[in-house]
Length: 248
Image (cartoon, rainbow, N blue to C red; front, side):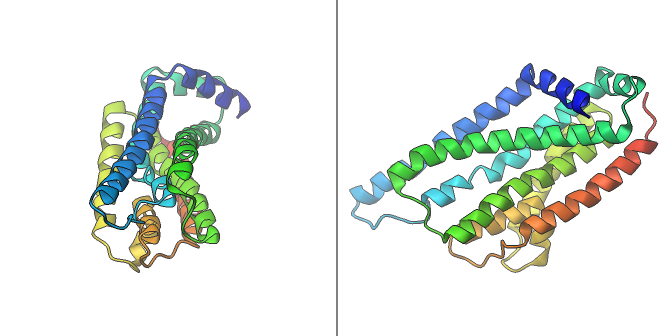
């Protein structure tokens, strides 16, 4: 496993998609900060009370809206390239088990997602807190938000690793991952607070977290449990299917 991860991290250093999604996340952080700043200027200009709908804690979770698309792009292309370049086949010939190959790719997806998210959080926190103040929601809720945010990344990694390793065509897997993310987002938006289906999709969990910041009904305490549980099931099925998959 160590050798597989070491090889993957070596490839990551040269991966253009990895740097692209980091840049997108940085731009997203600067954009939400700028938008909040201009909204505040407008409130001051027209004599309105400063809105609390875009406080720092709200800004800190805005990246979750796009993290699924960024991870779907990275995971499908990273794994797809291993298929097209024959890397996966060579790993198996070298004696690595299919389970190790699967888990190593899953871990890579998780790590990249966390790196991208942490960069976003650091930028927004370091600039947003001095400009707009600290966290407004109870600290216990905010800690759950952070935990749920990272578990959502794990959730996404499980879904995209499954698709990318079961579907060996890089174009097909990338399209499926992106369209699935879009479909899950639309499905989550159409739900209302309290709908149980919101717990079983990463996008539904993102919607619930955003509701909390808007002072609406949100049940965030157990979202991380759903994420871990469903990810375990997805990975178990994925490993089973990958073990039976014929590699060309």
